[in-house]
Length: 147
Image (tube, helix red, strand yellow):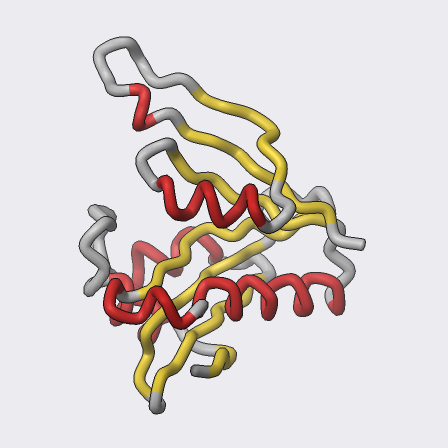
């Protein structure tokens, strides 16, 4: 397994096959998020086949890079593709003078939340959903400071 700089078409291809995601898998939907902003797309490959993706961009203009979307196909999650892409993002971020990586997740994404906490991300804010929604939908902001 290796990580390469990729393109949005590769990312959308992987995204469309990840069962947890309900957001549309359309190239333009993704491009609108990072349009006119510094961004980076990583693709995890297994035998030259895309198995994971990560899209990050300079959302806040505060010296941080925002990891907006990331995912790995279920059958390949034990290969540590997320860790490899996150390591690539951290290296790239340092080389591009970013001081932190920011990311959002929710209580229902337990594996991601656990991964982030175990890899030095700190919770910075929790957005409680309305009472009609489940606590599983609470959004959680996390941040990792880069040294």
